[in-house]
Image 1: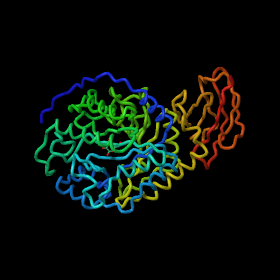
Image 2: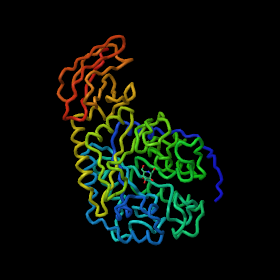
Image 3: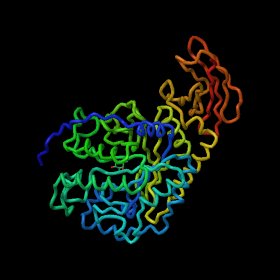
Image 4: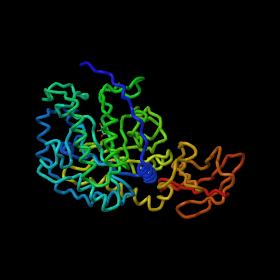
Length: 432
Ligand code: FHN
């Protein structure tokens, strides 16, 4: 195959006032639910099952006939997210397998042609609007199934049954038609979360990751912002943000940490989001029981906030429409924790210093929240401390006074982290 290298010429982008307001809302929200769900959930082997098992288009298409999640209850899902303290839901509308979870007129491979025959995107979006959560739509740029998609996406091309491939203009038009539907028929959409841009780029970390695909992003982004100016655009391309994007995401990682080698990009000034799985899978996986502990999940939320980022925590519901108890229990735990500690998370900014091994800082006006996550941390030194004097230092959970000493710009805090709680939050109030 011979690829042309496209250097996309990016148009100037000035976010609309509604968009800037939406960014502020997003930054204050701090916590969202990611949902990977669709016919790919049926084999219980994750959302990459078509690719990983090299299932042919013809055979994969059969999954549509089995997707009948009779136990699905949109109200219960949104309620669980709300009780977890989450402020938005990012829903897979179409993943790389190309199945559309809504009543699309642009493709037959959609939920209305499954035995379920109900527009799942609408059901969840309506419930979000009803219960006061915002809705984001995940939308895959790449497609493993369509003939007009011109690339092979890590599949060998052997035995896939996709014989004709390539009508790029048609594919772009198809995506624009689908995005128009999503941004016209589902009320206010808080954001579009793109994925798959990395198809046909050099691997993460390579010196030149210029895509060999012209995704027509200028055109697509302009369309989205024209239809809904407040709609935030993010793209999981693992690069620095491109013009037209409104937030920046980090996959399985906190901003700037690059623990998994996926995220070499530096955090930008845009609102930030870290998306993370609760076990090791995005889509339902029958054998993956490596669930993060409640403490690990709280640490992630707190440390994300310490970086000034949101946590988008993922669940992969089961094919029958139920969310497995391991996920529900952890969500409930986090919601309960946030009832006490929410004020140190929502509406805060990242700390004046980056998160440290002992924990991290979040800030709101003249209040600083010191999150002691390491149970062994008993003396914490905050160098270049920005307040000249402290009016009060106390534990958020019970107002108990905390000993602090400020000298030569370094604040020393005597901490005594409770063993049975994930995070000891110390509140420092600036004396002006
Ligand atoms: O390939 C996808 C994967 O299935 C999942 O949707 C994640 C979520 O961030 N994104 C892609 C991998 O980068």
